Image (cartoon, rainbow, N blue to C red; front, side, top):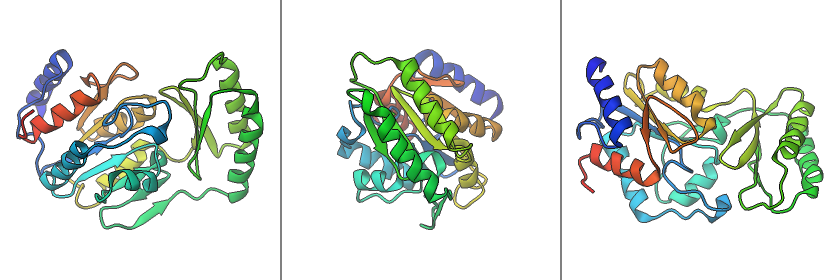
Length: 262
């Protein structure tokens, strides 16, 4: 990609528009975060509703890349499948704690059930003192959403969640995202998930593109950069060599790269 890639980087950062329209094809592997990247945030994650335009766009990407399109999200595979039906894409869920390969097989991080149960119970007890929180139980990770909460002491909430991570004896770590603190398995991140996909067909040997919007996506940016691919940040929460303003700009960029027009 060389010089042309650096020219495209400046083009996207300064103007937020697409590189050449034939850029995304069967030589590319496309990896996409979901919330904040393809969809706008809502007060609670279960209030997000996928529109038909996104389903068609993801289907077009899947066809154009000959199957080398995957979601890498903090949501679970089951959650994304229910929102994106009838699509059945390769997915890394819960930041890579679960991963569905292109052949449909699934791998999961193994976490002791007692640690998950103890963390779940401790989280419920510890957070009773707060109002307006929404705790998303993902089975092998827990997201504490504070969007919409009032009179909230973030340092106090952060300290409570960090104490729970410490009590897990290194199994969970705290990741801070867009108005959310997440307890996730320390051994799993989006960078590892991306690299696992890139060792398998149909992703192997492709030019990787990863698009994400917050701190949980940094590992993905680093992984795609190590592979000499394209890392694109969305919005104000995180930085990467390339940048797009919001989910609407991401969709417009992808459509332009596919030659679909506005």
